[in-house]
Image (cartoon, rainbow, N blue to C red):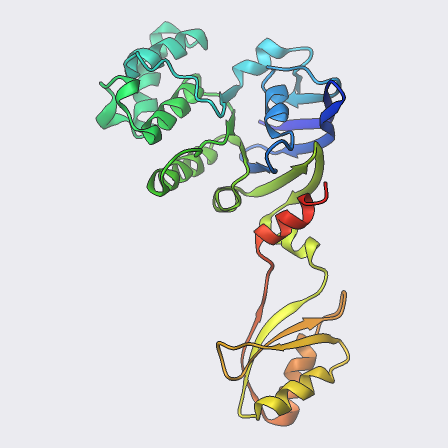
Length: 310
């Protein structure tokens, strides 16, 4: 089910928490909604889930407007907010039965849905415990189970791995990936590694404004319009190779890399490509070109460039 956000704005007093944001999440896609603290991520999630109205703009879930059909929209959404809405004094199975009832699951199907969620969310060995007896990781699983109990087409997760240890983070990521094969998922986070490891696409906002939308690879390329390659050239003298590379018209900068005696990092001029010229140089000189690999900017660097001045 498609989620469409069109020019939404939300203001608190004199501050625009969300400023004219537009993006779309396609059916069956896992999209990371990324931004620094205070960027407007949670406000946007609350608008999509009908917890809050925008001052301007429109959000549609499966073609239904959150303004005109909020009750119907909620039926299609599963939501795990950053503060997991758990009644910790309840047993897991009782809590899931309660969640199923308030989500309108037919009584005849509640037992079946609970058993399915216990299986899908990996709660089988813990199912008879109280929620308060569970680790933080398993409590997150219970939160996912309640969000999925009514079989929504759209799942929205706000900081789903917050406070988890590394093993729990990996387990929840894998669970989200499995769920994402059948659901449309929006994962809201400020953790870059989590988004890159889990999501098909990344939307970045900063100070309430959308600053990027694309795959991690696409964002790196957009932020870096200069080609950077690492090359290893053998059978030649290092200084001679260095000077010859500097003479290529399309090359702006050549750096010597310390990890190899014959390795160089080469930056081309803006919008130029130097790989063919490097290959031809090696052929002409009789040198062996044993490696030529693109060097991509880290997502952390891209994120900082896009958000630091906003």
